[in-house]
Length: 411
Image 1 (cartoon, rainbow, N blue to C red):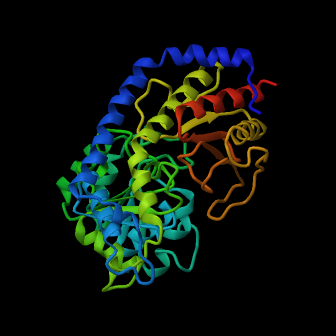
Image 2: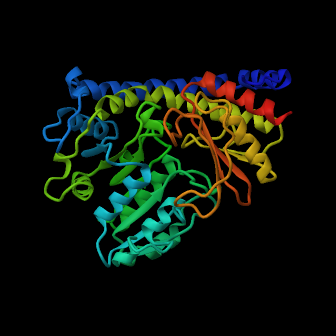
């Protein structure tokens, strides 16, 4: 049973009333995004037969091919690749980098060190299958005051750079996420110096949060996970890659077989869940944003440090909460776990996870393992003690989870 401390419930209800104008703006954005999805379905004459998938080699999978076109259209790109064979956002990033880069090419990250799971992909942490092990060079430029270091970028572009990597969301760092206005400015800057550089954007957690996507402001290729925003808790795996046709074709060849590319790869039962997830995605992203904003507002009143604050511009669905020690993080994670529909009786414990150097505490009482569009909370147990909360399939469940978690914290 959920715990309800009457004082906590009163605080949550009071703070909720102050958020009506912000929530109304989110509703307006949700309507725009819903129209964008529905218009794309109509453009490609989506039919009931397209919901059925293929097996074997996956030849002539009309539904799968329409999904590629629908995703490409939503993000205003030439081509899309949406596959259940892409197991995660990190896998989609890996396939893209391996497809675009060759020995002696240079990859430049301009948002500092990428997310932990990419360290061995790139070779920041030694791995015999990394990009660096295949003779690909890697450089990075850190952000300065939560913005791009234009002078360092300009100097680095004097060298032979093949691909620029931009990670919009924070990962397990505490810097701000990259909103579309900053992204557009830096892309315009880079292209004015060298229009041939491939700009690659990790868009995880950011879909449908703002009016525009990176590919609409000049990015050449972009990826994201389908157990985050665009899967709406319905897609149980998968990821997408969208962008220029020449680049996406290379990714398809790298994922399957050169020369066969996107023509192979059975969808099995993925078509229906990808399309239904995409259909519900604007609404679910809206619920997730509202849950994060309410959490931020309430916790700030309770004297916790949070980022973003409730009234700050948001680029993704992630909410940071600062704690004094790891015991508080663990207790909050227990509260989130006990607020969900699955394994609510389980108390998560910090443990080692593949791709991470620190022990991770992860609360994910979800229908899909690891889904972060369903309400979840996770943190590396290291200083500063910061927990990353995201998701909620409905605002009502998110509100209940906040009341339950804070009631437990208050015991």
